[in-house]
Image (cartoon, rainbow, N blue to C red):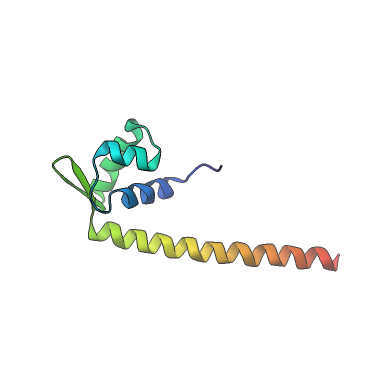
Length: 95
């Protein structure tokens, strides 16, 4: 298992809070401890990607746009990885 980047963790939190979630639910869904959840929630709220409504945290419209953008980047990076691995195979065959 590889460790997640900060952006991947932020995206996981936004995903967990899509329909609204309490802090504990976010912690369980993202496999993070409460210290990290607090840190990321504060950052995401300041960035306007999550809002707080009482005890619930909800992904904002900007948060949904971020998730769409992030998924598109992941998809394109995946394509790039396939191309790179195919090129390596071709390079090895020509040696």
